[in-house]
Length: 392
Image (cartoon, rainbow, N blue to C red; front, side, top):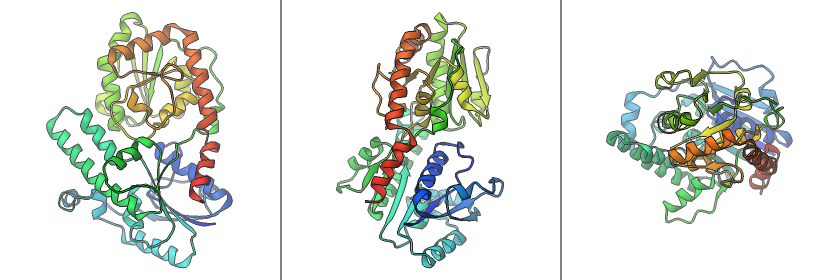
């Protein structure tokens, strides 16, 4: 099959974020038995190894990203009731895209992410499939629900309405629409009177290198860990919530506990948390090493949408997890079997303390969650779902 894959950025580095990891693996799968062309924006400062693109596509067409959103574009979004990036397009990108489609007989056009809808919506093709990953309208609604500031809440609610309008329109324009969590699909279905039959859920997977990681025999039994891009609002809010509401309760009975905050771009408020019990690492070459060395993984998210790769990665690395319920959207886990799920700060702290004290309890969760990863969340299993949905 001849396929054109559209994305707003090159998936390099692969582990830059959850989006690049997903894009890389989907392209790798599609490139196995098909002829795959790739068109994307590219930042010249992002130096890509010469052989990287050869491993995920036949031909790549990288257009320098010359689109800069201004304050006027954001103001226009209020009038147009569209996200700001819909108000300014790259003429060069659109020209190259149309030229590609006119010169090649593509059997499938795969659109990766809502930012590419700006261009793909104007292309006529009988087999356009879009992967939205998450519902941004649901994401902003979760920001609205977790905020206490009236003006901030109003902004998030407005953004949620804008993206809901766009996402519902997208569902009408594509043959199939893919999401990583059923929560996102159900949310959109509840917000329209139209019957939606073209939405499909395909979860993310875990790379084999993580699944096969060797365990550290002697862990730091006083260490807790949280990972993520640390200037991303849900991650910042989660860490602040944990440090203010949960961690002090843990320290009462476990005063030697160390909380590791691991991830690039820590915000100023995160940096200020540094103390004898709180380590802020910033960027590290190997996040998995910090997870493997820790005793408990915590995910106290208060907002978000889609599926959290951090949870899958922690399960694959065989570390017990205490999580809020919103962290688990799209993941088929059971409370007390695979993970401890606690939304109340006191209950969350108690669950962490139980795990710090009880190795048998830790091992029970580890075994069950790792078995679930092997059954449902390897990329090999996820590829079979893509194969079934894309080519039927």
